[in-house]
Length: 216
Image 1 (cartoon, helix red, strand yellow):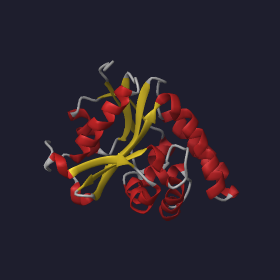
Image 2 (cartoon, rainbow, N blue to C red):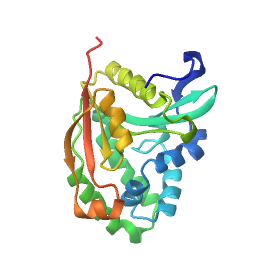
Image 3 (cartoon, rainbow, N blue to C red):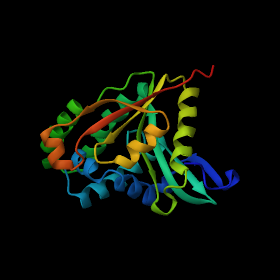
Image 4 (cartoon, one colour):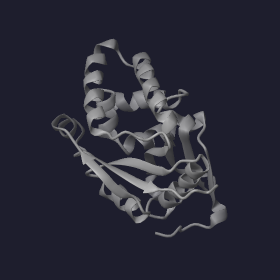
Protein backbone atom coordinates (compact mmCIF):
# COMPACT_ATOMS: atom_id res chain seq x y z
CA UNK A 1 0.00 0.00 0.00
CA UNK A 2 1.38 3.39 -1.00
CA UNK A 3 1.80 6.23 1.43
CA UNK A 4 -1.39 8.29 1.61
CA UNK A 5 0.16 11.48 3.01
CA UNK A 6 2.41 14.16 1.55
CA UNK A 7 6.02 13.33 2.36
CA UNK A 8 6.54 16.69 4.04
CA UNK A 9 3.67 15.92 6.46
CA UNK A 10 5.54 12.95 7.95
CA UNK A 11 8.32 13.02 10.53
CA UNK A 12 10.21 10.09 12.03
CA UNK A 13 12.03 10.89 15.27
CA UNK A 14 13.51 9.10 18.28
CA UNK A 15 10.98 8.45 21.02
CA UNK A 16 11.20 10.58 24.14
CA UNK A 17 10.21 9.87 27.71
CA UNK A 18 7.25 12.21 27.16
CA UNK A 19 5.88 9.61 24.69
CA UNK A 20 5.37 7.10 27.51
CA UNK A 21 1.64 7.57 28.11
CA UNK A 22 0.48 6.90 24.55
CA UNK A 23 3.51 4.91 23.37
CA UNK A 24 3.40 2.24 26.08
CA UNK A 25 -0.36 1.85 25.67
CA UNK A 26 0.00 1.42 21.91
CA UNK A 27 2.82 -1.08 22.41
CA UNK A 28 0.68 -3.02 24.88
CA UNK A 29 -2.35 -3.03 22.59
CA UNK A 30 -0.25 -4.74 19.92
CA UNK A 31 0.66 -7.62 22.26
CA UNK A 32 -1.64 -7.79 25.29
CA UNK A 33 -1.33 -11.54 25.71
CA UNK A 34 2.44 -11.54 25.22
CA UNK A 35 3.13 -8.83 27.78
CA UNK A 36 0.73 -10.40 30.27
CA UNK A 37 2.65 -13.66 29.75
CA UNK A 38 6.09 -12.10 30.15
CA UNK A 39 5.06 -10.20 33.28
CA UNK A 40 2.96 -13.14 34.62
CA UNK A 41 0.22 -10.63 35.39
CA UNK A 42 -3.35 -9.75 34.58
CA UNK A 43 -3.71 -7.55 31.48
CA UNK A 44 -4.42 -4.53 33.69
CA UNK A 45 -1.32 -5.04 35.81
CA UNK A 46 0.81 -5.90 32.78
CA UNK A 47 -0.22 -2.66 31.08
CA UNK A 48 0.69 -0.68 34.19
CA UNK A 49 4.05 -2.47 34.40
CA UNK A 50 4.82 -1.77 30.76
CA UNK A 51 4.02 1.91 31.28
CA UNK A 52 6.63 2.07 34.03
CA UNK A 53 9.14 -0.04 32.11
CA UNK A 54 8.82 1.96 28.89
CA UNK A 55 9.93 5.10 30.72
CA UNK A 56 13.06 3.40 32.12
CA UNK A 57 16.32 3.37 30.12
CA UNK A 58 18.59 0.61 28.84
CA UNK A 59 16.38 -2.44 28.41
CA UNK A 60 14.41 -4.19 25.65
CA UNK A 61 11.08 -2.40 26.27
CA UNK A 62 12.52 1.09 26.72
CA UNK A 63 11.49 4.19 24.80
CA UNK A 64 15.22 4.65 24.08
CA UNK A 65 15.03 2.03 21.31
CA UNK A 66 11.80 3.28 19.69
CA UNK A 67 11.23 5.54 16.72
CA UNK A 68 8.01 7.55 16.45
CA UNK A 69 6.23 8.47 13.22
CA UNK A 70 4.22 11.70 13.25
CA UNK A 71 1.74 13.09 10.73
CA UNK A 72 1.32 16.86 10.90
CA UNK A 73 3.00 16.72 14.34
CA UNK A 74 0.51 14.11 15.63
CA UNK A 75 1.93 10.84 16.93
CA UNK A 76 0.78 8.09 14.58
CA UNK A 77 2.81 5.03 15.55
CA UNK A 78 6.12 3.62 16.66
CA UNK A 79 8.63 0.89 15.95
CA UNK A 80 10.88 -0.60 18.62
CA UNK A 81 14.00 -2.55 17.73
CA UNK A 82 17.76 -2.97 18.05
CA UNK A 83 20.74 -4.79 16.53
CA UNK A 84 21.40 -8.37 17.57
CA UNK A 85 24.68 -7.57 19.34
CA UNK A 86 22.67 -5.38 21.74
CA UNK A 87 19.51 -7.48 22.04
CA UNK A 88 20.73 -10.10 24.52
CA UNK A 89 21.98 -7.53 27.04
CA UNK A 90 18.79 -5.48 26.76
CA UNK A 91 16.67 -8.58 27.37
CA UNK A 92 18.78 -9.47 30.41
CA UNK A 93 18.18 -5.97 31.72
CA UNK A 94 14.42 -6.51 31.48
CA UNK A 95 14.71 -9.02 34.31
CA UNK A 96 16.17 -6.32 36.54
CA UNK A 97 13.32 -3.98 35.62
CA UNK A 98 10.75 -6.66 36.44
CA UNK A 99 12.41 -7.37 39.77
CA UNK A 100 12.05 -3.70 40.60
CA UNK A 101 8.45 -3.30 39.41
CA UNK A 102 6.80 -6.63 40.26
CA UNK A 103 6.34 -8.39 43.62
CA UNK A 104 8.84 -11.11 44.43
CA UNK A 105 5.99 -13.61 44.80
CA UNK A 106 5.49 -13.45 41.04
CA UNK A 107 9.11 -14.33 40.20
CA UNK A 108 8.60 -18.14 39.96
CA UNK A 109 5.79 -17.74 37.41
CA UNK A 110 7.80 -15.19 35.45
CA UNK A 111 10.79 -17.53 35.27
CA UNK A 112 8.62 -20.43 34.10
CA UNK A 113 7.02 -18.28 31.40
CA UNK A 114 10.37 -16.87 30.24
CA UNK A 115 11.84 -20.37 30.05
CA UNK A 116 8.91 -21.49 27.93
CA UNK A 117 9.22 -18.43 25.71
CA UNK A 118 12.93 -19.08 25.22
CA UNK A 119 12.09 -22.48 23.74
CA UNK A 120 9.76 -20.86 21.23
CA UNK A 121 11.67 -17.77 20.17
CA UNK A 122 14.53 -18.13 17.73
CA UNK A 123 17.96 -16.66 18.37
CA UNK A 124 18.95 -13.44 16.62
CA UNK A 125 22.43 -13.36 15.10
CA UNK A 126 24.78 -10.62 16.27
CA UNK A 127 24.78 -9.00 12.83
CA UNK A 128 20.98 -9.08 12.46
CA UNK A 129 18.51 -6.38 13.46
CA UNK A 130 15.45 -7.35 15.51
CA UNK A 131 12.11 -5.53 15.42
CA UNK A 132 10.25 -6.14 18.67
CA UNK A 133 7.12 -4.28 17.66
CA UNK A 134 5.66 -2.15 14.90
CA UNK A 135 2.36 -0.49 15.75
CA UNK A 136 0.24 2.28 14.26
CA UNK A 137 -2.57 4.11 16.05
CA UNK A 138 -6.06 3.06 14.88
CA UNK A 139 -6.88 6.34 13.12
CA UNK A 140 -3.75 6.13 10.95
CA UNK A 141 -3.81 2.42 10.03
CA UNK A 142 -4.01 1.13 6.45
CA UNK A 143 -2.54 4.33 5.05
CA UNK A 144 1.03 3.24 4.36
CA UNK A 145 2.67 4.44 7.57
CA UNK A 146 3.62 0.97 8.83
CA UNK A 147 5.42 0.23 5.57
CA UNK A 148 7.17 3.60 5.60
CA UNK A 149 8.30 3.21 9.21
CA UNK A 150 9.58 -0.31 8.61
CA UNK A 151 11.47 0.71 5.48
CA UNK A 152 13.06 3.60 7.41
CA UNK A 153 14.18 1.08 10.05
CA UNK A 154 15.64 -1.18 7.37
CA UNK A 155 17.83 1.72 6.21
CA UNK A 156 18.94 2.31 9.78
CA UNK A 157 19.80 -1.38 10.15
CA UNK A 158 21.83 -1.27 6.94
CA UNK A 159 23.74 1.77 8.19
CA UNK A 160 24.57 -0.20 11.34
CA UNK A 161 26.05 -2.96 9.15
CA UNK A 162 23.32 -5.52 9.82
CA UNK A 163 22.98 -8.35 7.30
CA UNK A 164 19.34 -9.20 7.96
CA UNK A 165 16.30 -7.78 9.72
CA UNK A 166 13.84 -10.01 11.53
CA UNK A 167 10.77 -10.00 13.74
CA UNK A 168 8.37 -12.36 15.49
CA UNK A 169 4.68 -12.30 14.58
CA UNK A 170 1.99 -14.31 16.35
CA UNK A 171 0.03 -16.91 14.43
CA UNK A 172 -3.20 -14.93 14.87
CA UNK A 173 -1.80 -11.58 13.70
CA UNK A 174 -2.53 -12.17 10.05
CA UNK A 175 -2.50 -8.48 9.15
CA UNK A 176 1.04 -7.99 10.46
CA UNK A 177 2.28 -11.10 8.69
CA UNK A 178 0.74 -9.88 5.42
CA UNK A 179 2.48 -6.50 5.82
CA UNK A 180 5.90 -8.03 6.40
CA UNK A 181 5.54 -10.54 3.57
CA UNK A 182 4.45 -7.80 1.18
CA UNK A 183 7.72 -6.01 2.00
CA UNK A 184 9.86 -9.06 1.23
CA UNK A 185 10.02 -10.89 4.57
CA UNK A 186 9.69 -14.67 4.64
CA UNK A 187 8.71 -17.05 7.43
CA UNK A 188 11.78 -19.08 8.41
CA UNK A 189 10.42 -20.87 11.48
CA UNK A 190 7.13 -21.34 13.35
CA UNK A 191 6.97 -22.63 16.93
CA UNK A 192 4.59 -22.83 19.86
CA UNK A 193 3.98 -24.69 23.08
CA UNK A 194 0.84 -25.77 24.87
CA UNK A 195 1.55 -23.35 27.72
CA UNK A 196 2.22 -20.41 25.41
CA UNK A 197 -0.83 -21.10 23.25
CA UNK A 198 -3.13 -21.49 26.25
CA UNK A 199 -1.93 -18.47 28.22
CA UNK A 200 -1.46 -15.92 25.43
CA UNK A 201 -4.21 -16.79 22.95
CA UNK A 202 -1.61 -15.92 20.31
CA UNK A 203 -1.29 -19.38 18.78
CA UNK A 204 2.49 -19.31 18.45
CA UNK A 205 5.29 -17.29 16.87
CA UNK A 206 6.41 -16.98 13.27
CA UNK A 207 9.96 -15.74 12.72
CA UNK A 208 10.08 -13.52 9.62
CA UNK A 209 13.37 -12.43 8.07
CA UNK A 210 14.64 -10.31 5.21
CA UNK A 211 18.14 -9.97 3.81
CA UNK A 212 19.51 -6.43 3.68
CA UNK A 213 21.67 -4.99 0.95
CA UNK A 214 25.15 -3.78 1.83
CA UNK A 215 25.20 0.02 1.59
CA UNK A 216 28.92 0.47 2.19
